[in-house]
Length: 406
Ligand code: HEM
View 1 (tube, rainbow, N blue to C red):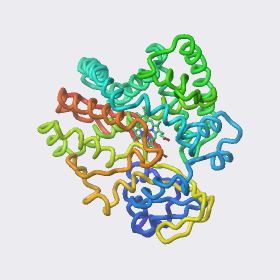
View 2: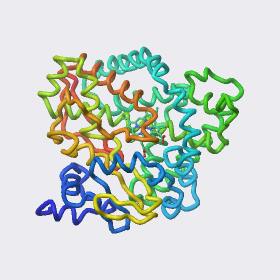
View 3: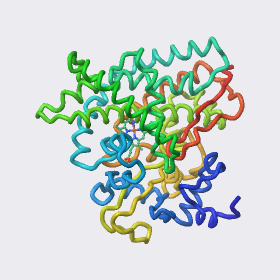
């Protein structure tokens, strides 16, 4: 154990994290924010923890690049994981980024998302019915993970009986983004990209032969391209479908799982939400802030830039710590407290700027429907023992949350 915050900040290395950190990273984030907000790590990258610094980095795509070709080359070599991650829109700068984003956003318009609500309610209620028959359930497997897989499957119109492998592919591909990965995790990630590509080639061929409704079906939209004739290459099309399927899975599962565990650990806030269900909107924002399911982002400084009194040379890789910025007391009064009515709450759980999460309205809707309907039906749900953490630093969530529904 470290004796004080100075030591905690001085000894921090993203590549050497302790079990205490995985259990609760917030004391470390606080120590960094207060003592070394632009912290140089042993590998030469810098780790940012202040809210204002993250906003600066997110807002300027000119100075802070998202293109990861240089950074990922030593980590992934000439592999499918390299091809996948460097082709995804999130790891590209304009104009490649802008083209793909425009196509995706068209199918995630507020109207399109509002249209998904009735099916989402039915799906959640069906899961709750099945859970009611069991009473002892796993809130992750039986509930939180089952929702996004269906929602994203619907968005790309993946046939129901072909959805089963999606979650494991997604976990393996995103798992490879952890700061340090084992040879086994690398092999698993590559295998998942290979299998996912093989599957999507078939799905895309079928959809080309029989197009869907582009207002609702993102895959048809990405295949057909823009009215002005702009199309994605085959490689861009397949990898961005994989990205989309992945982006909405683990993150949304973790929003629902983290939210239900946080409420259980804060009985007064849970009671407040049960007594006043209209608070669900601010409650979801607070869950996103308090236990952000995506804790880290990355950028590269492409010209010299000053942050927190330190001049970073061009070529400096940066990690943007969303989990720390979302507890910055300069932005959030009493930041360590879960307050489901918190307003304003301009958290960075979805990032901000040009790459701000394209699926945030959908994620919010999934979170609100899932949590409010579970609470209404099982207000006395109680955790059965310590929930099992996912053991990741970038994507924070639980693998298993055993629970008695009451
Ligand atoms: C609670 C759930 C979610 C969280 C916390 C989350 C978080 C994020 C964050 C932080 C980014 C910005 C990355 C960056 O700037 O480096 C992002 C980007 C993105 N997210 Fe989400 N996300 C969630 C759900 C979803 C869902 C449901 C979808 C799809 C339906 C989605 C699709 C995307 C896409 C396409 C991007 C890339 C946008 C771009 O680069 O322009 N996300 N997400």
